[in-house]
Image 1 (cartoon, rainbow, N blue to C red):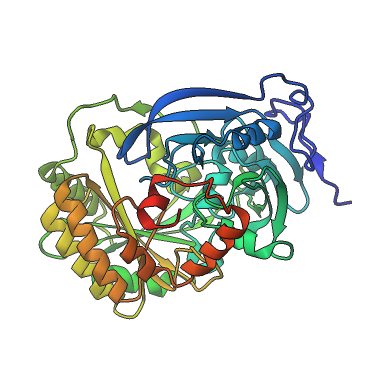
Image 2: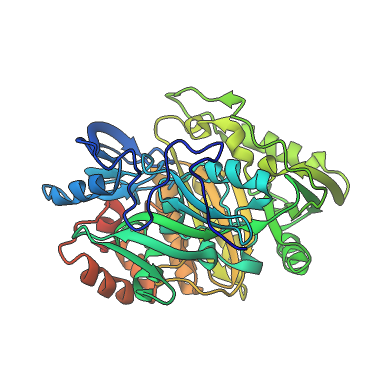
Length: 472
């Protein structure tokens, strides 16, 4: 019989289960202090911009409502700060990790219900030993579920299954007036889709019902294919994407000959029945450095070594899921390598037609401004998304740069070319595009604004990004 099994007695559960209708744990119903508050200097993962913010930390649903009753300042929900730019920054922040409890799980269907502040690594810790895994995952396991919903995250399997929204069954959202609304594709569908990818501007994502995927191993069968140019990398990605559920490419953007050469990494979950071991804490940690260590000569050597180490065209191996899906999680605080000025990630999507030429032009333009520390290329399929949905059929390229004035200017210039080709920039990574560029990239923008006016007529939810882009 298919019965929702409460997690009250689960090994990793920390508090009794909440009733989904109220979202309140039995321990928290009578607390006299439903939230904590403090002031703190905060930034996104790119470490820029930084500001002093008043941080509210609600402990339960009443705490969230208490934050919303305090109307002195507008605010933005924030998870663990894994969005790269200014999307989760404001003078007042509603911090969600205290609302991070697993609520229920159906062991037959893989349907998980959890509070929005639950982190992906907590979901993996609970679900993977039971034979279930995230259906879509970004390149780190440390965001919250609410943050992943707000960015409608995608992974290495978008070409086959789409973004996270394809697997979200229902959302519970606390609106600006304090009301708790349950929405899905059938009920309050406009709110559901506006929240998926809505950057936290529709309300506080209080709980998420997510459909997990069954797996039979903690290991991934990985095939790495060596390529000699951007054209070959694009061709191999397109030719192999139907053969493997996961595909991604690392490319070398700094070499003068064969720019865009790299490695296409294909993956599928193994079937060996081994559901241990899980991931371990990071083994390395980067201190808070004043200077940038990511410089062009060193990157040249790293890229040359990475490409040269795979001298055979095809290498197959079975690898643990952690280094396959989350390679950078092995280094705690890797963003501090860029020093106090931080870094900028420029991620954009372009249609397959002329996509290669647009990407080559973007690489040429940005390479003159700053060295690219990491370049990741994937393909996108044709799947439904919300009005601020990022993916479109074609390619997506993510480029990491040390932050300078020159690279910000180069990114804005490259964005004009991307717009002309029918592409767009990912809001979860952005901190530099203009209001006019944003409006030109997202044709359903007015649909989102109309819904926002309905659910937040006073504009209570706003961020530095929403102010910059004219969404507030």
